Image (cartoon, rainbow, N blue to C red):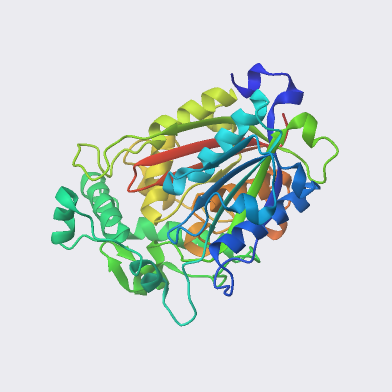
Length: 392
């Protein structure tokens, strides 16, 4: 069963978007952020909280959100309740499960929420995460014994592999950081709104070669929720529906293991074409692209795997001037996780909804009929793709 196989009235749409304060905002737990985000999403849609009969929850590094959120919200008689975890691909996966639930009649309005609160006043973002990092045990501890103990280092290895194979350069990675900051300047929710240059990028401190600070995503507190329902249920609600036209996941299963394509090809190469096929559209039809950007490199390799350029040509593509608010490719229009806010897969998803609704303000893209959204989890281990549309 796919959206296209159903009458238009039964197809899944996103009817509500709730976003708390994001970034360096303190005084609330992850669970409180999650509850606030769901309430905001319901209000955004014009639904009463009691209209929600499905709840999918996910927590970030702090693991502060679980199924007890149902009680916190006072929700009763849910037809769907689950905690989901596929790291940065979770948001896309939640929308997929919620879409199947409303299509089947299992639930009529499903809230999908992600929240985290790792930041503490007076504590750096890196320290906020390192305090919760566990050293792997067993054979997986071999990498830790070699000093590889964080995602920064593991993604740096992937990026270095791509650079070694295809000649990708730091200037090319920097072009992504500069372009996304250009979008963030236009986003009032962004944590960083000061323009940067390629020189600023190179001057930022090293994190794990080849990554500078400006290659790496932010650390943020906050919560984001969306409400998925059917088009007939959304009729007459407060917001224009955002149609969920296609979706797919890919989980290569190479976590922690050496394999020939590490750093060169990701699950996006499978999930992207599958989602486009379900939606019945081609890559050339996409108007806006919201990619998971835990690192600049992730953007580059995902562009290749989705087919925006040939494999190995991501570097020249991003350095060609195609990115940024004046560029032809409307990519990560809110600034992404590099400059805006880090809410795992909810970062690209929330911006996709804003763009599809035409509510982007200064950063609104004129053509926004079709939006492609990606999620990436683990160390290139999990991928989700959504194709969203402003009309059925």
